[in-house]
Image (tube, rainbow, N blue to C red; front, side, top):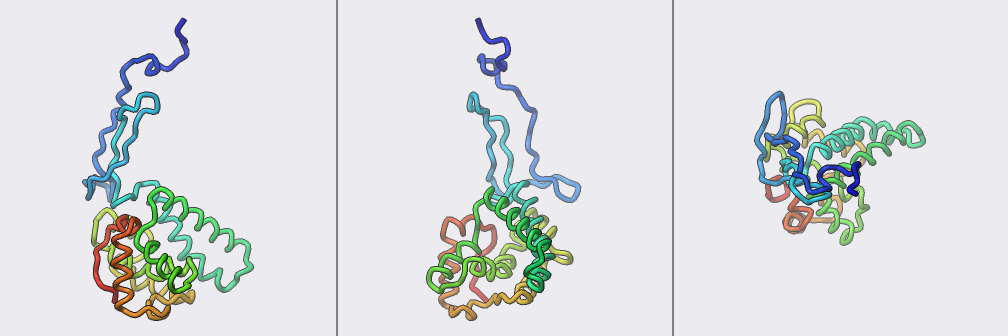
Length: 218
């Protein structure tokens, strides 16, 4: 006797049509076409048939990672300067821990990209602590990313209050305010080595997840 409670598709019936037809991304009150052909494919766990194909913004970004990343970045910008002045404050420590969790959830969805790729050389060859090694290049990385893709710009603009074109300078000032230099030379790396490091990082697996442009360091 067949199981009357089994789902229809388990008995060989046609896969249900979910009716989803991706239009792209909805930003600023209108649909925008994806800038790349990268997609997230959803398939039926029972038959393996295609259910939906959803475009990804940028290289590996998606709406889930965008939400977590924007929230994490805004939380860090608001909380870290306060925490640096009051390291034992449990509320501020809790807020920073939550921001770190959100950031981890974001890049667990997408893989890390250029800043993380550069960090390996800086930690292994120059002894820079991992957190600083991942963060000191962020203004440079942001400057290369801004303008590369209107969809990514729309997401980045949610992090910073004010014009996005000014965000790299403002981020550099933020890092300086918490004691992080954004200059390779501060860590014993001259321009030639920095340029070679960036070029190598762009060619790596993490670097290929970056949407920005390749150009020499400042």
